[in-house]
Length: 399
Image (cartoon, rainbow, N blue to C red):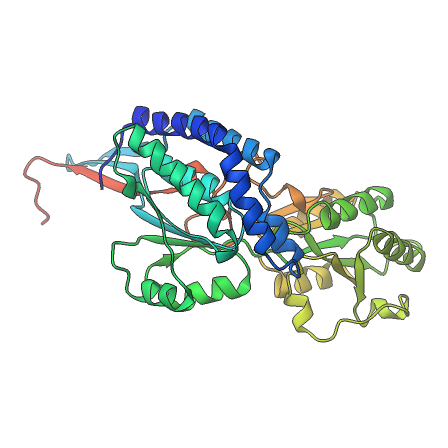
């Protein structure tokens, strides 16, 4: 694969910003047709499908942020000269070809691809059928930007395949494929992991927990829970489960108050067996599978625990490995929780909605990785490279 210099990559991104602005009406019209054809039964998927002026401005801003960031390719990681005289330099290098499989969200066609391109990777985009018309126009914007800068259009490719064709491609790709990033729900991730023959970087699944410690500031707790649950239900960083410690002062009064506030906000509140003792009118979770479920809806579970240890065990058993939070004024308890919880991001007295590249200072992101190999958390520009060792000798042989 050709290694592009930083100037030419940035020129392509400059072109992209101008092209998206100039073709805004065309993009909005295509998205309008996608929205009209969409069945709104899945509100979260519908929300992700919407492209409006704000979304387009966000695309342009994401491109600008990536354009202004340092090129992550060929950056020196280490430089060592051994006693033998061998000089070993470790540098960052492109993955090669990255396939991004995603549901809805036409903005991924811009924001994910711009990161992969700046990191000198060829991009294969497999969007959902619900965003087909939007993606056609956005990919054509990419093609136009590449042509304007005398680059091969194959740097960005939109794959148009049904489920069976996608399965066949994953098993036996007709071109080199180095990394697949599925962005979507549990079924999509499972499908890709089952059939892919190359590395798969798992991302996007939430099922986030918040634990209310006995020493929590209750007013702040209410505010954080409402924000984490209702600010954006389609976000993978939205809150799904709340565990209230029974040892908090006025436990029954507080959990009832939280239940009432959530319901007033339009949230369906399920109880577990422990909280049902107080929330007698609430439906109880149907089975254990609910603890594993990411809702992506105005729905939450209010559970009760007897200790921080029980809370940590439950979170580590059921969470999606994305984000978790503790509400407490006890710094020692917060430290214990944060050090023992096994998620990509863990919060003390803050909403899980901050697990986002822009909010965490990473900038535009490809995804939120819940894998432990390579990188965990927001996948920004610096994380879309691998590494290569350059070894310099003078007729050295191993003895």
